[in-house]
Length: 331
Ligand code: AHR
Image (tube, rainbow, N blue to C red; front, side, top):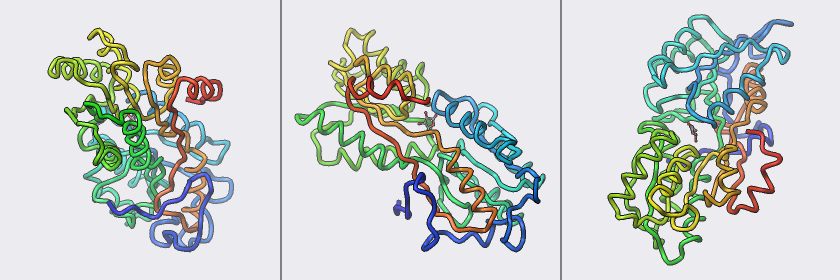
């Protein structure tokens, strides 16, 4: 995938070379003032994922805690029903029909959004992607995507794995659900890093972001490979923590016999890293509500915004690093 122009989200916005928002960016018509009149609240339709795990809860709570009435917003939260895309498309359509000023979208599925995004553009309602990208990716259909860079994050996990196993290792990948954009991005980043190394991919299976499935899938993989697995790349914390349980129940020691690397950086994973149960945790920073507000205000004012805003995220590669970070963790 061509790497789009990116910037660190917390650095703010640039004018030159950025995506102009004349088309759908302003609901005010002449692009000169924000959509809502003086003193009116800006109406925001949040097409959300809903209950999915610790990362999602942190992200969606942060968005709701940031887009408050005191901040000038009327946020309408619409979580998916059981992660079902149709319920998201229905909510998206309702927001367009209602004529909200802006739509925030965290997509449960990467594909299938063309019609919805075209309708929003026709209604001159700007759409901001939170976390999840869309496929095919057409930046003319949305204002920007705000997310940590999955390619960079997953490549950093792969680089750590290569350095941790210079003589090689058998590894498995526990993936998020098929069809979710970040899963493909994380596989691409990891594969880039481990290409040409001594690491051997034994298997890859989805465990649907869940600890329970992470444990059951890992149990199966250990049995199928006579416990000859030394490394797990779990694409989120919950699956990695579940895998650690399976490793222990197989009579092996996580962090010693099997090193487990995860993405998200939730509290449970950081505590597990501090205890040596996990071996590497890359944060996928969910706390970007302030950046999202900046984007919404710029979009409604017809100002330019980069088409992909990267949220900085840290890597933690030792118990000491986790112990030092834990007092300041916010999710
Ligand atoms: O899209 C981000 C992913 O979705 C997180 O890594 C995972 O925990 C969440 O469910």
